[in-house]
Each structure stands twice: as structure tokens, then as C-alpha cells.
Image (cartoon, rainbow, N blue to C red):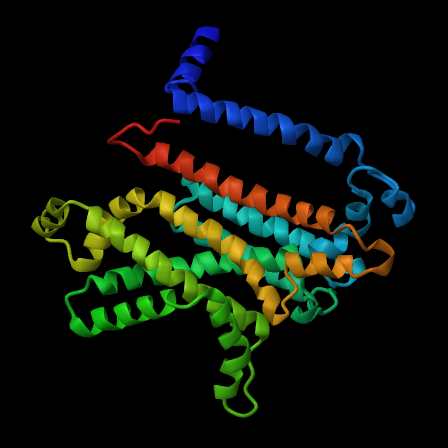
Length: 352
């Protein structure tokens, strides 16, 4: 074991003088920062306090602020006595996503999971049935909004992106031109501009008396934005599929859509798993931009918690808390990506 560790270290950390220098600098940086961070976050921190004044006397972090405000950060202004509903809705959404990641659920049966799961989440969040009080979505906030924007954004943007990628490679000039215009136009503007358009400009073009909910408008903007980036990644995967695969599918007499579904797209998806997951991770983090149009996501919920005059001055703790939430979800997606690459890779070995 020790021999393997030394061999690995010599190969990756001390192979050249430059690597040795980088290793020494990294060790110095760790020795300078880690003890300070541990002391601030654990050893000198206050985990309970009756008031903010007790925390201000501490030399480290005030996690008592998180204990006091965690429900506001996680669930926003959702009615306090009903906050078990968004908690259960989040668990259902996470459970549906986990089931979608397990290969034994891949196929038509997945619809039997998504349908009831989304319906149950909607009933829990809105209420108005089964004795649950109705809660308008203007009261929603925190983690449920972040999860819904990201999950629905990925679920609906992915098939749209695949269709756009196929359209960009289509032999029909009109379809190809429309796909190119859409992809280049959307990729040429930042997400925040689309959110402003959806929030401010779109209502001006609607007929009198017709309104679209602000949360729905933000969701549509996120879907349209992510689809353009997914389209380019999938197009790269399609171009990586050897020409012989297309010719083989033609020789089998398969029609265009059966070729894509059974032969070409599975190989293209396997090739582009890392960039696709990178887009999904970016989309999950970019949902925080909805704060600029007044939607109560995790970031705005943390800002609202800091507005309490009795607990001001603990912004670092608040943002470390939501950063940890983002990290957990993003790291889980990254690890699943690596697992899926190894499981589907049949042609080459990927070093850990």
C-alpha cells in the first residue's frame, strides 16, 4: 500500500522540478489556510446562542444564525406552519431525479415515476385540495424554487436541444436555417437579458387581460437558454459518430427517426456526457440569476434573512450555507457523470 502511494506521488507530484515546486506551493497554501478555516468554522464557532450579541463576541462563525434563519433561507416566505409541504415536495423531486439516474428505471416506466412525482409536488406547493390551504407561488422561495427551475429547465431543455441539434444538421434548408438562427441568437446573449425580456418585455406583447406568471416566464427563459447550449454539445456528439454508423443504419433499412433513436443518438450521448453534465451544473447555479427579477430563490432568501436587524452582520455564514447546498448538488451531478462514463464506456479505459 505504501509502495503504491509512493509510486503515485512520485508520478503525479514530484515527476519534474516544476511539479515539485507546485506541490510545495500547494502544501504551503493548505498549511496557511486550512487551520484558519477550521478554527473559524468549528473550534471558535458558536453553534447556539440566545441572541446575536452572544455571537458577535465569538472569534469564529456564528452558526446560531443558520439555526435561527434556516427555514427562511430554505423556504422563503412560504407560510411557516405549512413549510413541511415544500420540504416534502423537494424530497419528492430529488427522489424522482435519483430514480432517473438508475439504469433499471430507464424506459417507459420512468414516465410512471415522473408523472405522479410532479403532480404530488404541485399539489403540495399550491394546495387548494385535500384540505391543504392554497399558497400562491408568489410566496414560494428558497430551495424548492431553485430545484424546480433547474430540474424543469433540464427536463424540457434537453429534448428541445436534441431537436435543434438534429435541425442544424438537417438537409432541409429551412429547418437548418431556423435552427442556426435560434442557436446563435440565444447563445449570443446572456441569460440575464433573457430573464429581463421574459419579466419586463413579454407582458407588453400579450393581449389585454392575458398574463403569464412571473415564475413561469423565468422558467421558459431558462429552458430556451439551456436548449441552445445543449444543441451545440449534442451536435458535436453527432459529428463524432463515425460515418460508417450512418451507412450501417441505412443498410438495415431504418428510417431517419429510428436511425437517430436506435443507432446514432445513443453513441453521440455517450461521447458528450462530460460537457452535457457541465451544462446541467451551470444551469443549476445560474438559476440564482432569477434574483434580479424578484424571484425568491436561495440567494434572495438568504438576503432576506440578513435583513433582520437583530441578526445583521452574518452574511459570510449565510452565503457559506447556501454555497454548501449548491456544492452538494453540483458535486453529486459530477460524480454521477464519472460513474455513467465508466459504465457506458466499452471502447477505452478512463483513468480515475
